[in-house]
Length: 182
Image (cartoon, rainbow, N blue to C red; front, side, top):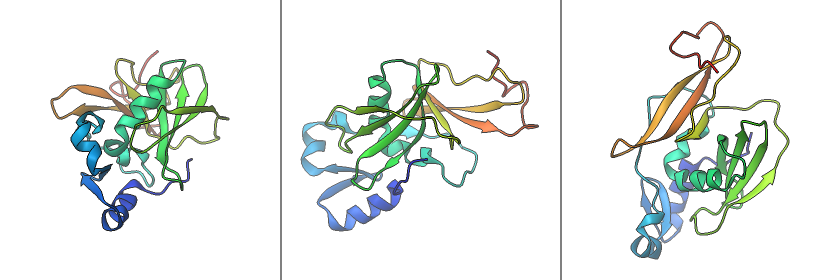
């Protein structure tokens, strides 16, 4: 799991000490918005999600552009985001897992101006979840019927589906609706 400073706390702290414009907790230098409004993340319609103690996807509306940039930079798609947050230097850190079992860490600058940097990583013992999969790729599937996911669509404000958030369900909570068959 990434050691993160929760984005909401960072945004609130920056609002009081920095000449930034706050747009739904998205921090952008004042000139950036006027000259490059395309740098703003889309307005996401987040689904109702299961309560988790440390759900990295709470920050997805703020770091969506960095997540999309990292997923696009992965040389072996489809990759799925399994953890994300902000490190002590203010960089956005995104952990991704590929279908082939590859595990990469992507570091992106918070403004989204620079190209993301990818690093190979060892697969951790425990992936905290949820898993974000960008469209057009399907959400994760499990060959084991006792392991299943609840797949929730992530939409932009126009209703366009951007991806899926998938939450692992505990054994006994699986149904025909939630089991993703290979």
